[in-house]
Image 1 (spheres, rainbow, N blue to C red):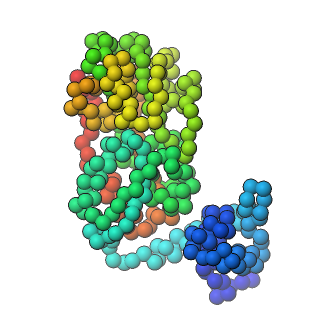
Image 2: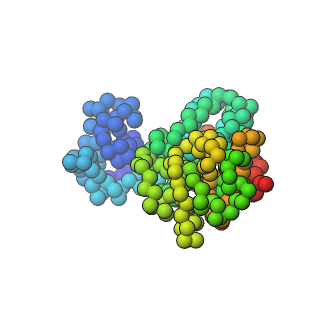
Image 3: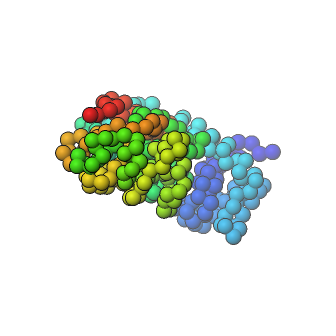
Amino acid sequence: MKNLNQIDLNLLVYLEVLLRERNVTQAANQLGLSQPAMSNGLRRLRALFDDPLLVRTSEGMTPTERALELEPLVKEILLGVDRAMQPTTEFAPGEAQMVVRIMASDYAESTLFPAVLNQLREHAPGITLDIMNPSDVSFLDVERGKVDLVINRFDQMPQSFHQITLWQDSFSCLLSPDNPILGDFSLRSYLGADHIWVSKTGMGGGVGVDPSDVQRLGRGDAALADLGEKRRIRVFTRHYQAAMTLAEQNDLIVTLPTRATWLKRDNPRVVVRPVPFDIPPLELKMAWSPLLHNNAPHRWVRQFITAIARSLDAPPQHTA
C-alpha cells in the first residue's frame, strides 16, 4: 500500500489534464511540458495506479475503467488545493490586467453587454472581453476552463456546471409600420403573414433548419403547435440584428425576446407589438466550469455581470 509521502502530487495534475485532453501532446502543451516529459509522467502514473489509464484505440487515447473512476476524485482533490491556494487578499479589479473569454448569444451581446462594457471601463479598465459566438464553443471547452463564462438560453447543460439566471424575458413582434396587417394585428393575421425565424443559437456547430420540426424551432412555434397552428416562415437566420433589419420590409414579421425588440423602439422604420398568443418566457442564464468557481477574479466578474443584468430596467410587456 502506498502512502502520501511516496506520491508526487504533481502527477495528479498530469492525470487530470491527460484525462481532459486524452492526448499526450495536447496535455503537454497545456502544462508547458515537452512530449517526452509528459510521456514519462504517464508512465509514472501507470506504475502508481497499476493500471494503463489511457489506452490507444482507433478513436485515440481512451480512458480505462479505473481512469474514469479516478477522474472525479482527482478533480475534487485539485479543486480543494485550488481553494487552499487562493489569495487571502481581495481581488482588486481596478488594477487587474486580464482577458475574460465569454460565449454569448447575439441576443445577450446586444441587450446586456453595452451596459457591462460601460461599467467595466469605469471599474476595471484593464479587463478585456473576448466575446465568442455559440457555434465557436463546445461545452467541453467550458468544462476545461478554456472559456470563462457562457451566457445564453439553454435547453440542456452539464450537471457539473454552475449556473445562475440573469433575467426572464417575454416575447414581442417587430414589423414595419407599413405592414398591411398592422391595422388588424391578431392571431389570424399573424398566421397569414410571412415570418423571420431566429435561431436560439445553441452550443457547438449547427446544421440547417428543418422547417417541419416544430419543437426544435423554438418556444413560439411550439406554442403555436399547441394551438394546432403553424406560421409561414420565409427567412431563417442566426442573428438577431439581421432579423430586426429584415423586419423593416413591409411584408415580414420577426418574433423576438422583448428586450431585443426594445432596442429598436426609436427606429421609425419598425414598430413593436405584443405577440397575439401566449409564449412561455425565456430565461437568460450564465454558466461556468467548477474548475473556475473559486477563482477570485472569476468570481468578481460573475458577480459584476450579474449585478448589472439585474439592475437593467425591463421593457414594458406590451407597447402600443
